[in-house]
Length: 412
Picture 1: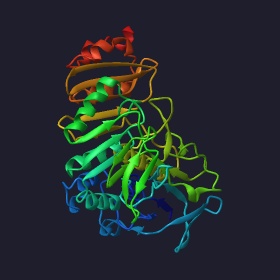
Picture 2: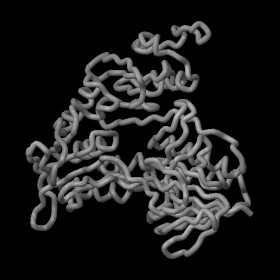
Picture 3: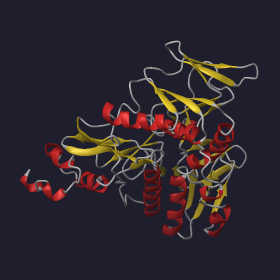
Picture 4: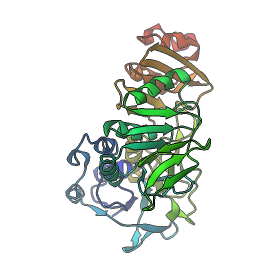
């Protein structure tokens, strides 16, 4: 009987557990998590923090879900080390857990700003369900706010402030939000969306230090220019530190995350990884990539499990990820790797509609759609086909994209 151990019960770990049970009905499967509750929807916790959703719809699996599938779930369990020679996982109180195949799906922990008073009361990070509960409770009684981190996670704080009536400043280091993927035209649409919910973007800013009162509660953020922004609520979203400390000495290759091939296999036999913390070989890019989307993490967990159960390289991970934002009056979607690429094509169609496509070696590698998301499936199809289309960007920027208007691949 094969013994599988999964460290982490996010969507990738849970997806792997479910797939392993389907692929290997007689196996022993153990899922270890340091959280105190089973899998929940990380996408919906932002709606809970905004005050829009109660807790009930956010939970995905109850403990009975694991029992029904004969999967052993260990909550509030901390892994201290992994011995890949002896094939055992060491935990803080359960002792040694042996494995034949191991999946690491521990995700990350929000990065704390390296500035004075960054751990003060009232400064929040947004990652777990417990974080969302604390944010909601605090936001409901706050008047002024500061947001730090001009990326996809930071904008969730802007939405919380808007929904909870907090007058907030969004402090950005550069001249626009998500400057690595958006030009000024696209970013300005997002800036207007923020302003409409009461959040003011502040450019060429950031945080030099936080000020606190006698009780240790945040009262203001001071930026590197010396400007002071009063706040009784602060949200920080500047990235993740991957939870891999317990792998020290295990011989597993890391490079800002755990390095895996297209089969989710690490450089150590019988050890796999999935989810946010992977630097995976992207078969569409032809190089290592990284992606933190929910759909990507779920698919990585499934693919890892298929390969673990098959005892061979059975299925490669091939996925075009996407990330959507629905906080404003217009929709937003990024797909693939929009920050990569050696050339770009973009067009603005209206005050709330804009499109940008990133190309590498003539092929689409990602993009951003604001206002009209309808072309996404066609762009993803071209990514999967790896067609060279950069020389036909005018067709891709038409308001209505018709792939029949593209030259046939053999004519290129």
